[in-house]
Structures are given as structure tokens and as C-alpha cells.
Amino acid sequence: MPGFRRLLEEHDLTASIFSAINAHLADRGRLMRQGTIVDATILAAPSSTKNRDHERDPERHPAKKGNQWHFGRKAHIGVDAETGLTHTVVGTAANVNDVTQAQARLCGEETEVYADAGYPGVEKREANLEVPVTWPVAMKPSKRKALPGTPLGELLERIEQARASIRSKVEPPFHGVKNLFRHRKTRYRGLDKNTKQLFSLFGLANLVLARKWLLAPGSQIASVVR
Figure 1 (cartoon, rainbow, N blue to C red):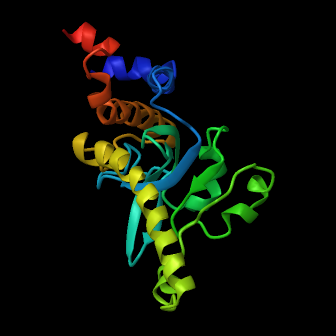
Figure 2: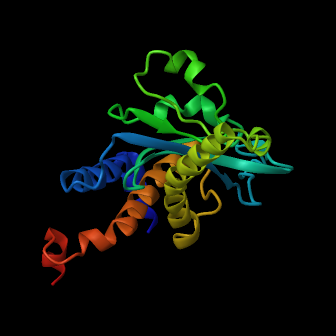
């Protein structure tokens, strides 16, 4: 429905839908906001990236992840560490470093922000110096493998395992968007349009993740469904 999509874009309604969904979930205790997990995923650009003037989208850039190059955009999200629901979405070009968008994904109420090893020195960045949170960032794999088999080394390994368990809650929102909704590639030209679509997708992913609780006997939505 191109007309409906255009209406959503022109009036910036996808961000409003995302906020409304989260407000509904927060009112019912599903967004705790005491801790946040930050992460990002690359959304590849389709092969047909040129417009009628045979020009590529200037807002798409290549980025290297591991040994593979990607061309497209990146979705950065902030996820509630308790429930695994997404409370913040930021869209950028694929070559934007994850750590530069860390502060933009905070809800403002958390006391801890969990991140993987791709966020070294995040707490030392100027934008984060006065943010009243702690940053439990994952240890680099090479450093973790080198932990000694001492009581201290074993303790540090258990801490890393506990943090990894918390960080794993960031994967279901990405699974919902990329696998359930099959949004593995960007569909539009321009960062603005694609970011607006991300708001609607992650909002719907939140509803999917919270569906068991929302449809539980006695809930308001369950009563309406029946």
C-alpha cells in the first residue's frame, strides 16, 4: 500500500507508533529501563542501488565486518536488559562505528549499559563522560582466552558468562526484524525513509516478543481478543 506508506513517512508516524507501543508496554510493566543493552546489525543494500540517473544512493556506504564487506545501512538499538524489548532505534550508514552511537541509544533511566567487545573505551568518549551509568563491556576474545586458570581468572570468566547471558537478550529483536519480517535488506533510497521503517519494524517486534504476556488470561488485550 504505497499511499499508506507515504502517509506514514510524511507525518513521521512510524516513530509515533513505536513510542505508542512502548508506552503501552511500559504502562503494563514490560519496560523496566534500569539496564540497557546496545548493539547494531547491518542491513545490506539490494543489488539495484542506482536511480533513474544511474547514481547510487549517496547515503549508503561499505563497511567491513570480520573479513567480509557489506554495503548498506546499520540499525543501532537500545534494548531493555530485563525484558529484551527495544526502547531506542537509530539508523545510520553501514560504515558508522557502533561505539559512536552508544549514548544515542540510552533511555535516560538506566544505571548500567551492556555492550559487546566492539565498544572499547565507550565510557571515555566525550559524549559519555557525564552519563551516570556503568558500562559492562565484554572482554575481547583474545584477552578472554588468555585468562589464567587461577581463582581470579575463573571469577573473571564467570563474570563474562553472566554478562553474555544478559547481552543475548538483544538477539530476539534482530531475529524478529530480519527473520520473521524478512527485512534483511534495505528497501528504499535515503537514510530517512529506511530509518522510519525501522521504527515500525522494531515496534512490531516488541509486540511479538511480548505477545505471551499481552495475551495471558486477564490482560486487557486478551479480553479484547476474546
